[in-house]
Image 1 (cartoon, one colour):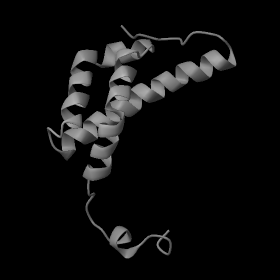
Image 2 (cartoon, helix red, strand yellow):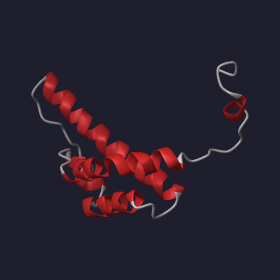
Image 3 (cartoon, helix red, strand yellow):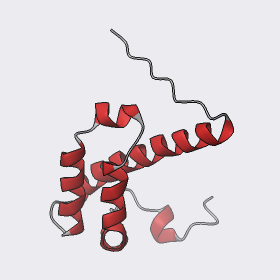
Length: 105
């Protein structure tokens, strides 16, 4: 990939957060992201996240509060919620079956 990447990307030694594109995405889709969290159907979402806290974090990032490290964690959490919802959609489209959940004791 060295011949495909621009030198400023190829030669960097630290990760640079994408603050401006991320903030623009939050400003454009903040309501949708909050709705995704509030309407999440996968049972693991409720077990892994406090929905009110996650929605509050989206609102704060939407307003530009916090820093890029907290946005990274928020982004990972939102990606997981979206992925779990996608699993439900794929399984219900494929077989009409529910999602099995295994809880260890």
